[in-house]
Length: 364
Image (cartoon, helix red, strand yellow):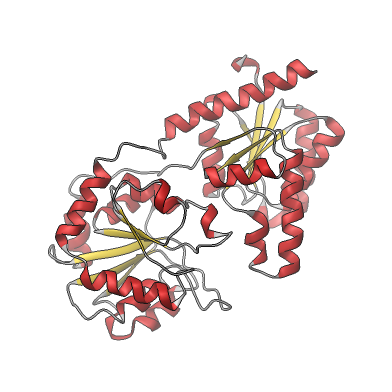
């Protein structure tokens, strides 16, 4: 059956995006054909997708992301050509779009429900998104939380610490990610860490924010005299080097709000922290309980930009000891679960897709 399976996939974020890489790798055992969707030319890409599907008539199309240009095209192809589709998503669409405005959020929620009702299957990055999709009408679903793209190289901790001028007895806390400034929230990834460091009096703790974006200049201004001293900005690093930089840290922060946006997520950062055996500081989100084997610190507060969260994070950093870090790191290394194993997810995805195709063939 697997040899006869013809699967097409694409990512609504566009050709060359990390999400296209994710879905291509997830479907690698099925030799899926990748359609190169152009996010900058959505309408043109949607029409090209329709032509490609009409010509190839694949057994199934898999869409990574929930962009309307791709999603509405798949709904039409299913309705008029009978080509089923699978949706893969890492976000609750309605709540996420609701950050831009109430009306956009309502329309996004309706679109999300339509996708779930019409899809042949749904692949969520978290089990929480899978449950949401099933409650919205998806008939079949599974979870594929993703994986890291690299491994820690030999002696990485020492080499990166030397590069960043971090002493071995200094506790380094940080994150990796894109820093996009949100004017409405006065926030970007890492802002809570910079604000917390302003309240920390000890000098043997540093914050290391790895990445770049429109928010970096804001964060550097917020850092003040601590810039380059207790708050470091290495900038964007190649994906292959991310595990090495994380290995140089003692704890990684996971900035997520405790609401209908953040609570549904794992984010790619979490898989990278797991791969680097890095203890995690995060909020009181579901994942902080479900995945924890005593290697997570849960900080109160409704969101990373809330004063309660910032103060609690500062208190944690002020009292954090090397012994506590070592204990949490040992717990991370000896964990019994491995939710971000790539081969396991590929095997599950292959079985899921083949079962969907088989079911459609039997129904026909």
